Length: 576
Image 1 (cartoon, rainbow, N blue to C red):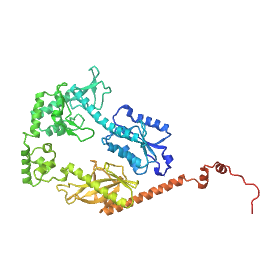
Image 2: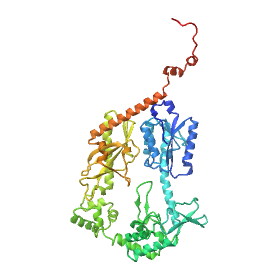
Image 3: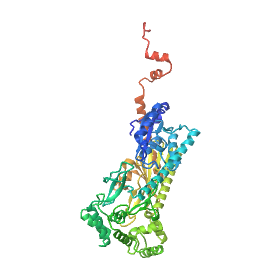
Image 4: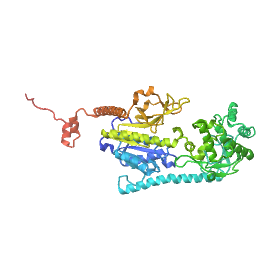
C-alpha cells in the first residue's frame, strides 16, 4: 500500500507519531483465524481501544514465516524504518507468529531491534503481554518465539506422518496425476463422487482421492511408450520426437522431452503402486534424495495400466542406458583419468561426449559433486563446477566490500548498516544499496575469451534505490571494478538474468574503490539536498500565515486567546 506523504516521519511531533501506526499482516496456509481479514479486524479493535490511527498496511499473503526472503511486505517495512520514511510511531502485529516463525529466534529479535532502534515500538495485539521491555515481557516474548519456531517443526513432522498414513491406506497423497491417469474423488463412505480435473481439489477433509486409469487414448500412448522403449529399443529422445510429430502432448499440454519420457518409464503408478518420500525438503531447506529404505510404499493400491513384467523390463533397460553394468568407484576414476591424460583437461561437455564415461550425474551421486571428482583425478575444477565454494566465496567478497564501505563512510561521519541476508546497505537513513557480483561468462568456444560477456547475479532485494555491482576479473576472481547505478536502470533478459554491457554501463563505472566512495558520497549529497527541499516545501505548506498570531493562539493563556480572537475596537481620536 503506497503512502503519498512526503514529510519524513521523524519530522512529525512524537506525540503525533505515537498515535499513528502501521499494521503488518501475514498469511501462509494456516487456519482461518490467521486470514488477512481476521488479523486486520483484531488489530483494528486493538487500535481503537488505544486511540491509535492505522495509517499504513504492510502485507504478505501466502508467504511462509520461516525466513524474510520472499516476504516483500516485511522487507518494505524494515526498509522504510531504516530510511526514516516511516510516518508512524509503532507497528501493530496480530501476534508473534505473524511476525515470523524464524527457526533462529535471534533473527526475529533482530528485525524487531531495527524498529526499536528507530524509535518504533512493536505491539503484538493478540498476545497476553505488553511489549514494554519489562523482564516479564522479555521472557514471555522469547518463549513465544521459541514456541513459534517449534510449531513449524512439529507441524512438519505431523504433516509427514499424516501423508505417510494416507499412502499406506492406498489413497493418493496429492498433486497432479500422470499422463493416462486420473484422480477419483471418494466420499466418506468410499463411494466415487467424480473425477477431479487439473487444478481442482477436494473441499472436505473426510474425503479421499485415488488414482484410476484415464481415457483409452492416453492409456494407448502409455503402452506405446513402454513398447517402443523395451521391445523396439528406441531411445527416449526418439520416442519424444515421434509423439510430438504425431501431435500428442503430455499431461500439461506441452511437448514431450527425454526427461518426461524417463519420468513416465519410472512411474510405478502405472503398475498400481504408490511410492512416497523419494525426495524430501524440510522447513525450506535444500531438497535431498532419500535412500530406498526411507521410501513409503503401498503396492497394488489401484488398477494398473502396464503389466508388471513390461515395467520391470523397462527398469532394467533404463539401468543399462543410464549406468550400464555397476562400475566400481576406482574404475570410474581411472576412466576419467585416462580422458584427462589424453585431452589435458576435463569438462561437463567432454564427459557427455566421450564414449565409455558414465553419466556425469552418476559421478556426482557417487562422490558428492563434480568438483570433488575432478580433484580426485588431479584436475582443479573451474569455478562453474564449484557451486558451494563459489557461493561461499561470493558471500565473502560481498561482505568484505560492505565492511570497507562501512569503514570509509563511518570515518566520514556517515551512519550505515548492512543487512547480510538481503545484501543491503542503508546509508544515513536516506538511500539503500543492493550489492551483487558480476562474472565473466563463456563467449563462443573460448573461456573467458578476448571479449567476455559479464553476467550479474540475481539481486536478493530488488526495491533498493541503487545497485552496486562488483565486477570480478576473469583470471584470478579478484575485483576488476565497480558499477554504481540506479536500480531502475537495470533491464533483465528473457531468461531472467541481467548481463552487463560496457557500452550501456560506462557512465556508472568506478575504476577504483576510492572513486566508488566518491560517487557514493555524491549520490548521498544529491539525495540529502532533494530530501531537504521536500522538507522545506512541506514546511511552507504547513506554516501559518502569521507565525506570531499562531503562537499566541496555541498558547495556554485564555485571556491572550480571547484578546486575539476578539480584538478591541479603537475609540477616540488618533494621536498626532
